[in-house]
Image (cartoon, rainbow, N blue to C red):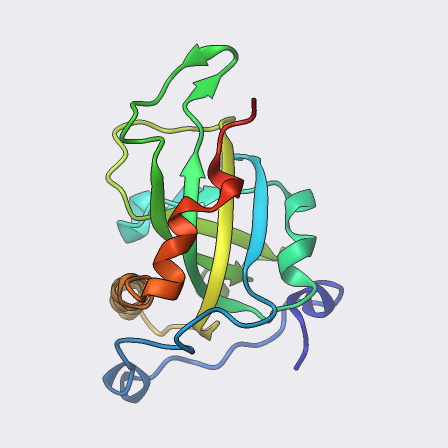
Length: 195
């Protein structure tokens, strides 16, 4: 298995094309009943501006972590879609900018890869927090615990096929996180505010 870090040192690798048969056979829950190595993987950093495609094109807004936060993930995993929990901290520049509900720990799905449908030239990690935020949170501290792997990175023949897989990814992530050994990570010390 080539890790995401190894893939990042080369040109953008080809990704298999998603076919309807893949979508038809997708399970509603993946992985073991509790996280196993290399999971859990903690990530953190200030939210960066990305390409702006997630919310506008795909109906799935994403938050991007800075490149320097990714080695913990990319050195031990492969490209694809992952699930876990994320928290965006409410304060920015000494001011409270998010509500209490917005700054709670929420389920997330993350795409780690090259986004072959969009022909990215750089490896990225794009995190979709499953909460209907009413404002952006660029510059806010975000902490993430990645708990499992959903599927490999794929290319798509249409935006509609990509959106369909994203919606399935979200459903699978919620099903996986409902298991007790995963649900307990919602209260992980990583998500506690610094003293």
